[in-house]
Image (cartoon, rainbow, N blue to C red; front, side, top):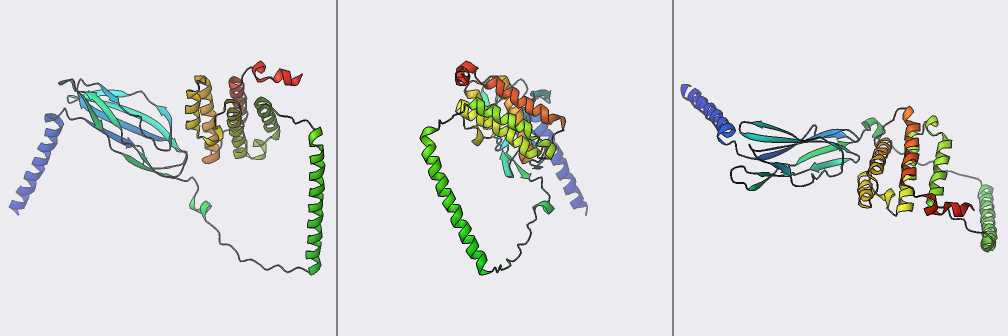
Length: 316
């Protein structure tokens, strides 16, 4: 009994000495740790990501690569915070991210560089990777699939089938006649082509008069706002905006020297639309008209002058 007690006592003393030695005798050991505020989240839910890099005191620490955030959207990056403790310098980087697609996501690893104050050499440390599972906002009851009922055979009198055949023949006859009529007038009708500005302004006016929020069609309202803005950017600036995510579109706009303020406004509006479309987010009622006015404001800020689009000439 005493032998076992002494063995355990010696083991714990050695463990404590090892931890003390690691903390104080090896203060120059550098490392990087990547962590998340949660390992599971719902789509559209905010997550906090932290990168903590430790190096010998007196080092200069920098991140050497863009953090591979997978399908996450980076909403905010805080200023790095540094502290010195036990002859070590620790710098903490914090990011606020959000996902708009389901599934298992992986972030990392992150590479950081530091200058060794003793040898003046630049060393590199690599962090761990983390996995985050993104779930749907729907409950299990919402996603249950109902059983399909068996088909009930339908028996109709013979005259009903004959009547249907006659109606179909009449429809085909009318279609043929109408097609011939339209083709005969094709050479006499001038084809009207609208400019991207006329199309966008017409769709904005139509949406404004449709009163979709008052009818409870919030998702349709924000989907249309997003489509109008994306379609205009594609038509006027030849960027495939409808096929790009919000983050991809904003990167493209920066590459073609879009004004920084316009890119920021476009990102904020489209993120609001994405939350409504994909995460079933419902904005406050007073934001409906504000978001519409913001869309008009963005459109006016990125459209060229009227003399460049030729609108005045078309109106004449």
